[in-house]
Image (cartoon, rainbow, N blue to C red; front, side, top):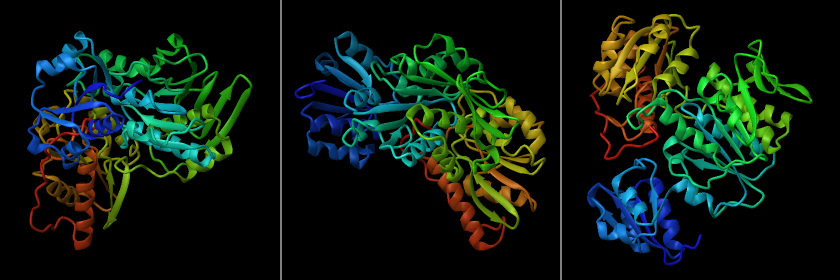
Length: 477
């Protein structure tokens, strides 16, 4: 792909848009970076691109510019069907996303991980498995580092492990992972997609360029994902926590993690050797081990990696124990299904969970949470924009309190808890009604817990500190 002199419009001045602008400008492209926000609200990193010759264009894109551009690069937080992108495409421009652009320059092979839940844990674990196996590996994508920023350090004999979202997959064309997986498909981002199948179709695109020499890893327990097995060109490897498979990765008798091929089977490790909590994390480990085998990692090496691997930040992360109450941060539970999985991890704690729910809803019903809440939860503490909806749907399931902000939520949770209880932040909602991102929400939660520990007094807070409201949402939240 020749970039020198190419006229490029980048839509979206967040992390991936900034990285693309730098990459393209450094290679001689004529770059305009657009965002609908006023320039005063742009990040310092975005504004600083002017010094690298990038044009910073706030507001609507003028038609004369859309008539001239040859390439449009979409940030994942921007819907791919917006009018400027469609207009430019009709005028002859190519419209792609950041991971498509990066893949055209990236050396080596790609492992791509997508799914409604579990992406970051699985991506991180695969990276550790390959590194411990002695392979050159770099990890990024939706997990944090834009894929375009990883081009420079990529190697012909290396692996790039990349978390990809449905938003990013909307704008791929030739993106070709050697190993691709879909962990699950459950209702999420229904504020962006008209139907669940539209959302699933975006996930399915991760397999579109694979060939017979590649590996496609699928969740055999997921009705939508498992239905794709017969229609793929790649070699399919399935995983299951519910049943033994003729071929694939599965959990046997709730204890043994087994790999079975046409040549026989092998017990790779025992479930109780894992530090990760919950059956959903067994799924993540099965998928990661399948990817490791596909990339050539040795089984014994993988077992040792999984044994050492701890929860990723904001994913069922243990924070503190204060006066016999354990606090867990699962701020990444930004959907109802993710919160279900978090509660399942505490299914044995009958009536001992204080659950913090709420934020910006994704137009998915909360009723599926009712059975587990009824079984596990002592009290619900509600925050954020969708508190009214949550209370309306769950008011008969458990006692409910409203909290003003995260500090108030932590204090109320602590007051409601008894020795031996668990306070769990698993909001089932996006974060950007009150926070910059799910990471910011989780960090504030942890800070409030640690501050309360410092006072040595559950429920006795100091002066109220309001949560800062963000200038921009994070599309991963």
